[in-house]
Length: 385
Image 1 (spheres, rainbow, N blue to C red):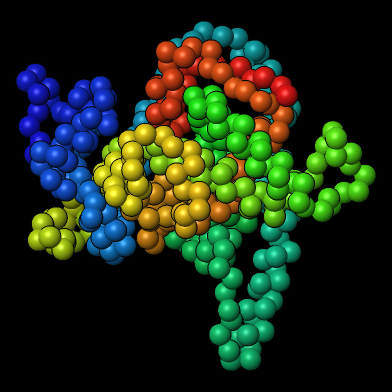
Image 2: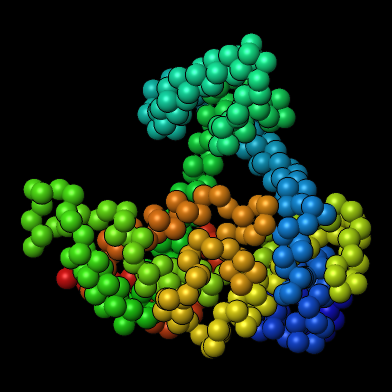
């Protein structure tokens, strides 16, 4: 265990003061593996070159580690609901007022219900067709080739997830969509702050975009090139400087220790260096060790937007040196769509604006290293071309 500072009962304070410095000091003093107590739990921290073992070995499970968090969340939700009921019981109000509120509440517009119905209407014919093909394959005595997508996965494991009907399945898909939109929007928002912090990059991104669009045949002949352009997917894929900028942003902003994506050892495990992890131990990745390693190149602690130009390191390519989307069996399958969405947003931003500035430059470091979902108390000023 990494020794605690006098007066500290965990490593929380030291880590929150400077996560980068804490991770660096521990790695230099205690090697590639060390134990810490962070945010209420003991963890074994694994650094390079052993990150791939954690991510690819069947001996560790993120879902098992997440179960503990789910139990805490469930207790919190139950306590909150009971507290709310207690307030409601002891708050004096007219029974007629209560009845009026109930009637009014039912008449309110529910956008979630509308989007859920859209998913149900779209999914029903697909499911019926799959059931038909599965029945035909069964009658012919051959194995049906199951589609490899989230819908089929949820249908196959309906009992496991305790789904009652199609509405349950679609509600689960809707939750996944909300999660994906949230994380992608957060990354796109972070990209704007990096454009503000490194203003010279916008000129290069705009220059690259114009060169590519000039070489591509317009899709819509009715557009006036002087005022508007087509932005086909083929053009976005060719924007290698934009891709490099986004990959470098992810590399630079990710938290040094991936506490939110921890793993639990399903059995005793011995790493290739002989270190043994007991069953039940919680493991987190020292992302700093991979993101500042020799594979990244020179000046790994600095933000260099064109670091990956002319290198086989696209923003969707995962590895121990690039872990925002995970690694191994649980690498994010939606990263291809997410990166494309972020690139399209970036391309549209540099098309319309020539400069972005932070309202408070003194909070630049805070903005560049904000954690996922964390609000950034620093506004942006965008200047139209």
